Amino acid sequence: MSDNDILIDSFREAEVKKVMEDLGFEAVSYGKGNHDVYHKQPVSNIEIHTSLFVPSHNKAIYEYYRSVEEKLMPKEGFERKFSDEDFYIYMIAHEYKHYTNSGTGIRSLLDVYVFLRKHEDDLDKNYIDSELKKLGLEIFENDNRDLNSIYLTETS
Image (cartoon, rainbow, N blue to C red):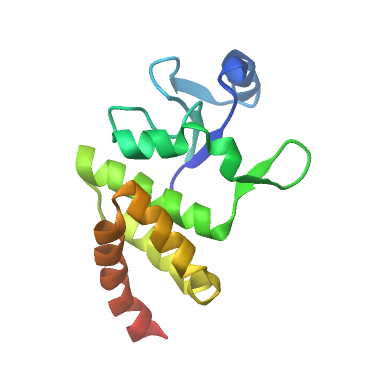
């Protein structure tokens, strides 16, 4: 909700830096991990990722997303995207990374709330449950969904 994450091939990192700077973004962090951070006043924050996770986040999640290309569907041109189910799984894995490493707050809960409010009835829950089990995130996601069900029920 406050930044945009973009995944690129790592060999394009320097090229993307030039493009971002040409667009008026300042490189806040570059070449220091699996993502570079760019900021442009007043509130534009872009994270350019070369991988979605690193091994120190969580080995199972890192391995699952190491070959992320297999989960991406063509959109247009060179652009790729997750299915709604795979996006939800990624959103939960990303939240779990923050939860276990540095904490998380209302923003992550709201991300899930907004997503479920729009997509819950259309998602393949069996696929999601199967993939979350592979990641060891089924309990975390269930607790998250329980927290959100309070809001989904009250606002429906």
